[in-house]
Image (cartoon, rainbow over all chains, first blue to last red):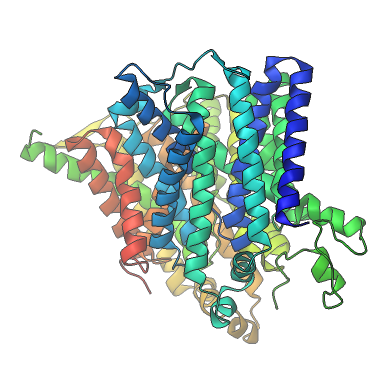
Amino acid sequence: MRTLPFLVVSLIIAALVFAAALAVGNEYIFFAGYVVLQYIVLSTAWNILGGYCGYVNFGTGAFFALGAYSTVAIYNLLGKNDMPHVIPMPVLMLVGGIVSGIVGFGMGYLTLRLRGAFFSIATLALAVVLETLIVNWDYVGGSRGAYILRPETVPLIGSYVRYLFLIMLLLAVGSLVIARLIERSRLGYGMTTIRDDELAAEASGVPTLRVKLIATTISGTLMGMAGAPFPYYIGYLQPDSTFALDYAINAIAMPLIGGTSTWIGPLIGAVLLDSLQQLITVTISSAVNLLIVGCLLVAFVILAPNGIVGLFHKYFQHKGDDFVGRRRTSLDEPEAASAAGSAPESPA
Amino acid sequence: MIFSFDLLINAIVSGILIGGFYAAMASGVSLSFGILDIVNIAHPAFIILGSYAAYTINHQFGLDPILTSIMMLPAFYILGAGIYQIYYVAFEKRGQESLRGLAFFFGLLFITEVTLVLYFGVDYRDVTASYIGPTWHFGDIDMPLRIAVPCVISLLLIAALQLLLGRTFIGRAIMAVAQDQLALRLMAVDPIRIKRIAFAISIATASLAGAFLIIIQPVEPSVGRDYIGRIFAICVLGGMGSLPGTVIAAMLIGVVESLTSTFYGPSWAPAVSFGFLLLTLAVRPAGLLGR
């Protein structure tokens, strides 16, 4: 499928999802659905750097929180003039995205010339540095946290939660389209070669540093955009929980469970894992749900390295179009094509 | 900012003492990450596991926490050997350690932490021992024994590790496996076995470090997260895999953190070590005593 038809189809699906949520007629669907959609964006964003390039980012929470706190900063700035809601949410998201994107670029520039593990550790460090800054910055609430009063309703749509759901739905569609576009472009092939063998990629003319910087910037931007509406959703923002590692483990587990090599993997992972989590949080407890995420993550990386998408390919070998809709050529070896660009076995 | 000489000296002394304890925490990572190139991001979780082991036995039988942790060394050693075996079969052999291996350890971190939460709850736990409480005074300098004792034993531990690595066959084999696995194989040594031993030793140090941690401060399961970045910062700053470097870096970070929290307030202290880490990575990734 080309990008334009894909966009149209995903928008139709999104409209159906929204219509279905409306048909259920329960506000809780929007509350729960918002979180699922948010994780679709976060895991897709993580996958652009982690899945395509092979660089593990532990700082999802930090980028997400940057988006959220830029919203809080703007809210406080305008709240002083008694007009906290003049700026529409999409603009806030854009601002959050730009802030996160710049930080992502800066951090990539500092650490991406080193081996992958250093980048991962630096992302952990970044999260703590940013959290310390926010804790000590009284303007956005410091360690006490910040309150956001959201408007009750939005014209045409109804309750504000519905509005947030709709916006997150559009962002989810947007991020999937971006991920899919990257996957099939020169840029995406460059990323894949970096993941498989960075030295070989550099040797065959892939501008590795530039490609990696583009990946961190896009990934950071999307995470920030996902974070921007969060203060309006949650109502009370607190650094400890906003910078939590829980975002990181979810954003890592979802693509790895779904499958990291295609755009559909993070989507499957996020929908399955987060629906499961919502269920467990309601029925058992929220501590158990992190345990299950951890266990599933470990089980999948050991037993099914290519995730659910990989399992699909293993058991339902399609002729012609493969699972992600790419046409096979006679040049593709069956295994290579079925793994859809996953990491090959390294020579012993 | 009130500047007084007393405060300065005391901050430096307590920084050095805390640094000794940080060194014990970081020595395990120096072995696994610095020498073996295994990014064991779950190390702090194993340290917390060590804390809870010390806590349980201390509460049940009243045994000294450090003695307990020495008795627990074999158990942690076996745990480490088991984890390495899984890691080797599932990731190293397939050449997937960079992405999936990291995710594996990240998953282990959460599994250990949440299991402890479910079993012990999120209350802070502490231990009892004769040296928790008293403080020695040297003129103006205070030396709380609850930090000084872990510091001394931690330095002993690192000296022992250094002797092990430098003087024994196994230790030299460990240093060799970091440099050239093939050469080791040609000399009829199984590199996988050597790596398993080394990784098991690195997890065993977590038992001691865990006991030190619970002596110094009350512990709850997610305390470990605060130490992930700090431990890796020390390891990188010290120069990957150099134990003397680790001690120097740990004390440096301890002193800087202690000065920051004395003169600017404790809420700024966490940023220091991570700022240091980012700076080191950007300016001199080889660390202080890097190879």
